[in-house]
Image (cartoon, rainbow, N blue to C red):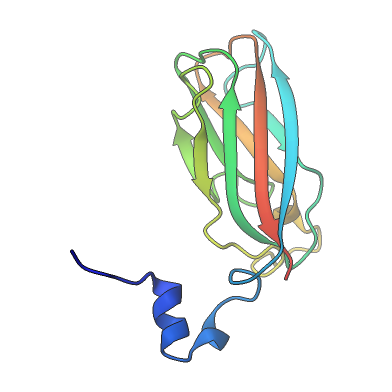
Length: 147
C-alpha cells in the first residue's frame, strides 16, 4: 500500500504554500442555502437565480443540488449570468429523487474574468433543460470562501 499526496499537499511540502489561492487552504468556508419550488410549469430553458450576489473575490468551492421528486428527462446547467455553464453543462444529476448533484466550483474567483461593468459572474444560476419539470423542491447549497 502506498502513501500519496494531493496537489496542494505536494506544494505545501515543497515550501510552495504561497502558490496556493488564498482561502483554499485554511480558509473560512461560508455556506449559502437556497430553495426553489419547481412546478409542472417550469419549462426547459428556465433560469433560476440563487443565493443573491456574491462578493467580488469570492472563491466558489462547490455547489450541491437536489430535487425532492424525480425529474425525468430534466437536465441542469449551473453557472452565472456571464456563463450559464461555468460550473456544469446539461447534467442529469437531479433526475433521481433526493439524489445530490455535487458540482465542483473549479476554484473560480468571482470578478476576475468578467470584463463588463455589470458583474454578471456574481449571480449563480441554474438553467433547466430537457423535459418539463415535475413539482418538487430544488435545494441548492453553495460552499465558498473570501479568505
